[in-house]
Length: 123
Image 1 (cartoon, helix red, strand yellow):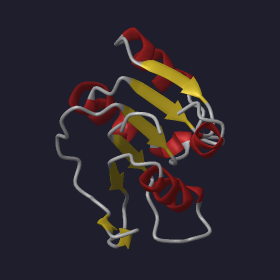
Image 2 (cartoon, rainbow, N blue to C red; image 1 turned 120 degrees about the vertical axis):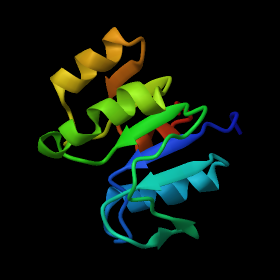
Image 3 (cartoon, one colour; image 1 turned 90 degrees about the vertical axis):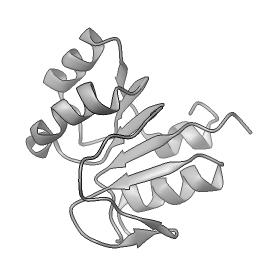
C-alpha cells in the first residue's frame, strides 16, 4: 500500500449512490486520512461531514465532487487555506478558471477520477 495521503473530499454526501460517498469509503479502505466537507450534516464511514471551512494542516490532496457553478465559494479556501499539493477535478467538476489559479499557486491540478486512480494504484 502507498503512503497515507491526507485527503479533503469537497462535496461529501451521505448518499451511498453518490461518487463522493464511494470515494470516502475507498480512500479509507486504502489507509488514507479523509476529511469530508459537505453542505449537509451526517457522517460517512464513521467520519463526520464538516460544514464549516476551517483550516486543515498538511493536506496532500483535495478531490472535488462539486460542480463548477458551486466551486467559487471554495476558491479561497482551497488555494489559500488548505494549500494542497494536488487538486483533482473528478468527472463533471472540470473548471479551467480554478485549475489555472491552482497551477499558478504551484498546486498540481488535473482532471481525473479519484476512484479510478485508486483502483489502478495511481493515487
